[in-house]
Amino acid sequence: MGALTLPRGHLFYDGRWQQPAGAGVLSVVNPATEEVLGMVGAGDESDAGAAIAAARAAFDDGPWPRLSGGERARLIRRFRDVLASRVDTISALVIAEVGTTVAATRSHQVGLPIEHLEYWGEMAARPDMEPVAPRGAGNWVIRREPVGVIAAITAYNFPFLLNVMKVGPALAAGNTVVLKPSPYTPYSALVLAEAAENAELPPGVLNVVPGDVDVGTTLTTDPRVDLVSFTGSDTVGAAIMAQAASTLKRVVLELGGKSPLIVRHDADLALAAKVGLQNFTFHAGQGCALCTRHLVHRSIHDEYVARIADLGTRLVIGDPADPATHMGPLIRPVAVERTDGYVSEAVAQGAQVALGGRRPPDHDVGYFYEPTLLIDVKNSWRVAQEEIFGPVAVVVAFDDDDEAVRLANDSVYGLDGHVVSADAGAAFELACRLRTGGVNINGGAGYTNPAVPFGGYKRSGIGRENGQAGLDEYVQLKTIKYHAG
Ligand code: NAD
Image 1 (cartoon, rainbow, N blue to C red):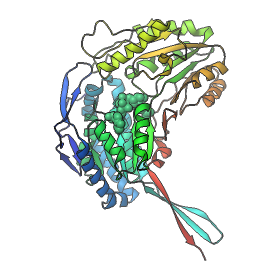
Image 2 (image 1 turned 180 degrees about the vertical axis):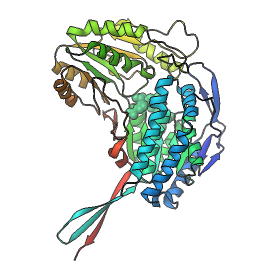
Image 3 (image 1 turned 45 degrees about the horizontal axis):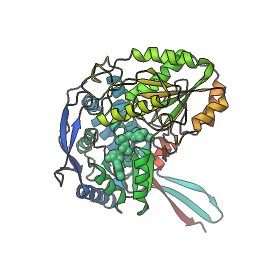
Image 4 (image 1 turned 135 degrees about the horizontal axis):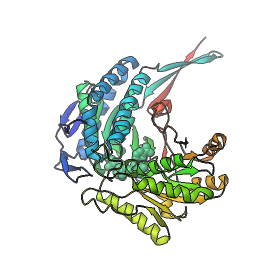
């Protein structure tokens, strides 16, 4: 892992590092050590407005939307190459900024986004026109055009990945972007600004404005922005949809989840326990698509719980920069309090704690919470219905597949799901019956392929990221009509 090198600037727009208009600062804190990594000047409404102006000019008058797909692909690859040459530095920064373990940082936080950019380089080069079969005296051509200025607003938990998942397809389609990262994680966005500068993307194509809600509000209400692509909570997603309504912007919303893991009576219990544990301890449960509602067939319930409790007590919690650590911290004290609040409420309602259920007593420093498994929980309780975003899972027993499906779908969310079963046909049938944007079977492959669409049903979102469907969110279709006679 590389040494910690902080990005050198605060705001980046119009191809240059800029000073924030106001005096606000974002204090970037390492959640494992509570040390302040650095201070980033916070953008405000006027900075957001200036960045939008730069993105608008780059779209309306600059070269980017008018380049051929092949030329855009070449520049996206150059951008990707700059980032790929800095993987160690970016990884060290992400570990310090958000607290993922070394392994998860290498795989999901940094390695995967580099693969995404390779993919978006390939997608940018695809033809942007397709003919329609002639009909009568008519001939038609459909042209794919960029939407315009994209406001990308992201969450803290996978900051570099989430930023790339928006910037990649938006740029591939020929749009220009203003990116506002979470106030907790500005550095993972500023490294993209550095790469844009080094790769010599044209000015105004990628602009980064760290800041808080005021920047987000400006980006979602300004008439010069054409589309808002948001990743975050469903509450903020709903606010953003309302904010974007008066100017009729397109919205792509990637929101929260409370995804079900169904363990059938015939499941390989060693596999089920491994998958189950992973689904609430990976990144300390701070993953939108993690399956934190474990619906387990009554006949294997006790053994499943015993296995997870056994595996869970062996997890090493601590400094995520140490490769021996399995689980790092939560982002801030408020997240620990929130997690503990859900656990206390469930226990007061009658839940039993099968694992964890408290702050680790041997960690005075850092925002840690023990991996926690709650049993004797009702699916209707808040702990089973609301997204906790901490290392907590609940177990609810079921008697047959129909009941499992009913419980799984009894949620306002619909992001992901998981089925563990020795019967591949039964697992596939269950997967088809879940009202979720994705389902893993027996460990699945997750979202490790940038060509695979990702998104949610119900309150988990609107639209898709990744793949052709993800690119289409950033595209307008124009029909050009000829009279053949
Ligand atoms: P959040 O919703 O609190 O904040 C997300 C972003 O929105 C931040 O940049 C924040 O500053 C900004 N924001 C807040 N209010 C705003 C407003 N009124 N207008 C414009 N911008 C505003 O989310 P978080 O706590 O950073 O992240 C955790 C949430 O993100 C969880 O719910 C998680 O499930 C979700 N998430 C979803 C996905 C997905 O792809 N579905 C991926 C990662 C995280």
